[in-house]
Image (tube, rainbow, N blue to C red):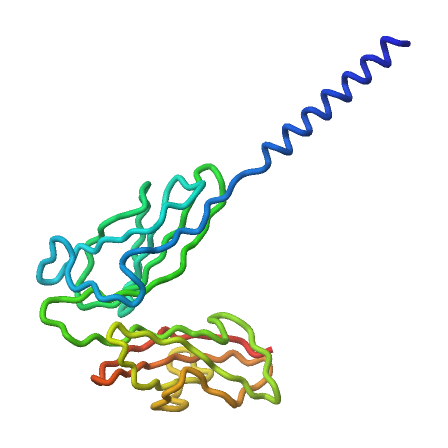
Length: 232
């Protein structure tokens, strides 16, 4: 009888010990968020190493993230909407890009053999070519409602807001296009000097589309993506 009790106690001890080891093993670390350094937000890359007539080698760098084995950098051409991605093991890389073009970029830190990732902020920059002295604004970004989001109308009225930026810091105004046509929203209001527009009439359960044209003091224009949202 004593022997049976002793075996039961030992088995319980082994079970508890295994349980503790399993709990500790499940505490997997996650990568930290990369912090971007260069190219700086809304900056102009006047020249890059190895610059030619149509291409420039742009240097990208960011702070090393903890618990990270590799990084995926994504660079988006803001004129064409095309993006290129590259995976690297270090926190810097040089990429050949066409000049006279605005871009955005972001970095994702990854830890191998896990699903954990962390994404940096998204920054914009302009890759300039020889002799360029004026730069078109960066395409504006939807702030509220967010792209693909939902919005609660108040008395069938909603508001739109957005953010704009320009390497020259000379944005003059915006034209807002809005409607239910996904391919080509209609002009709602032009030459708006603020970054918001209120009292826009909508219908419940409707899907709406909008875009922003940004104009600077040199009459350079940029057009945003077409954003969409649903009214609750």
